[in-house]
Image 1 (cartoon, rainbow, N blue to C red):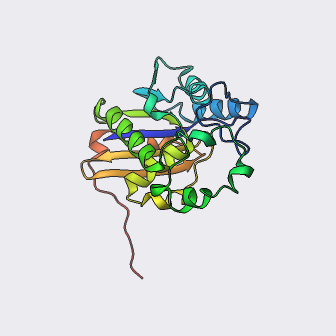
Image 2 (cartoon, rainbow, N blue to C red):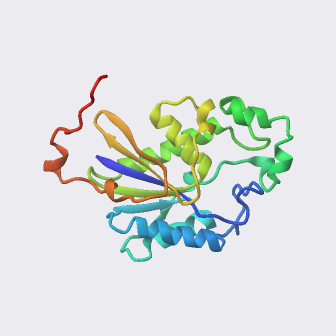
Image 3 (cartoon, helix red, strand yellow):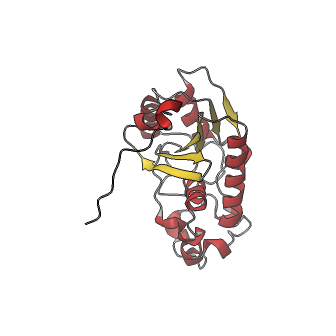
Length: 221
């Protein structure tokens, strides 16, 4: 059962103010660097078979903190990049809130194209296909970290849990949060969403333990 850890990059000076998109040179700020160090510490007890990252500066810097004390190389994957926001890239969010396309982005993203960019449906398929290629290149019982961006992670979550992507804005993905999926023969299982706490429970169980039936019981009132 392969486990994918979807990790958002740390905070930067563009978060909540401007739409950074794919602009180069957007680096982690002091808060973001502290967050990256903290998520690396939270992952300390989990063996990572591989670490993949979007090639943008803020994601690479987050991934570098994660591999700092590990004998693991970062593999850059172009399809893990941020959404192509086209003409919206670099704009202030307070200006975009007034744009005629903003309601569509929030409530009908499957049918709304960013001016000169891609639709969120296209971004979702790009992200899922990248994750499937990554997952397919690893064996069972491995844990893989993937460092990407909030909208891409939310879109991947919507796909794997069967949520229509027009509802994806209902999901929250904070900076340096961890969202984890375990892929079983019966399909993906969401283990944690937007997690900022202990991650010890994500360590794979020994095969003999994993094979045992759960002792949890449900009592019907």
